[in-house]
Length: 195
Image (cartoon, rainbow, N blue to C red; front, side):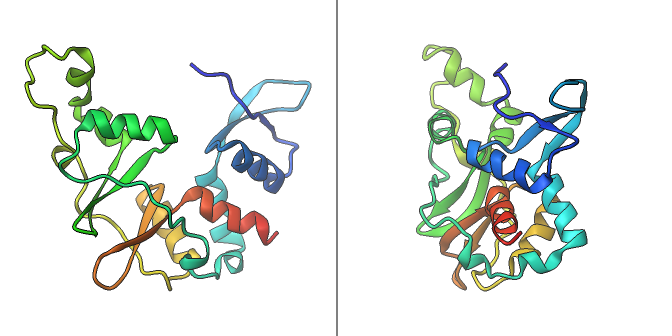
């Protein structure tokens, strides 16, 4: 267990709390009664914040995705070993990465996918284990990935994130080539900048 880097109280301004979470690269924060009364009340997540803004202030999300996406995207190939991709995610603090083959998006793999598969553990347990070849990303990646074009408005991406409970949406061109990626932090950052 890691110590919490940010705690929010129910008295705090949501925009300020989200700004602080973004600064600390935290996707969620425990919520307590106050700075004095540390009784736990719940969790504030970027997804909760985005969902509330979509319902109450959708005009804050009118910019095209091209203006908020990250273009220096760390990705992997279907042939990469699960162990290698896990280490890549840990090294760069990523919860998921796009899977690219011949410059085209072919899937997405998340930490949850790797853990749920159970295939990550044998590689870390022993090099002499029963698995001679390390399992590859192609064994666990999701192939039906929701992707958008750069001209799509941020509101549509936010709605997809909420309805499908996903944290990353790849941005591709008309030929399926990966141009960038938008995550919940990018959407939340856009909202607090316009507040």
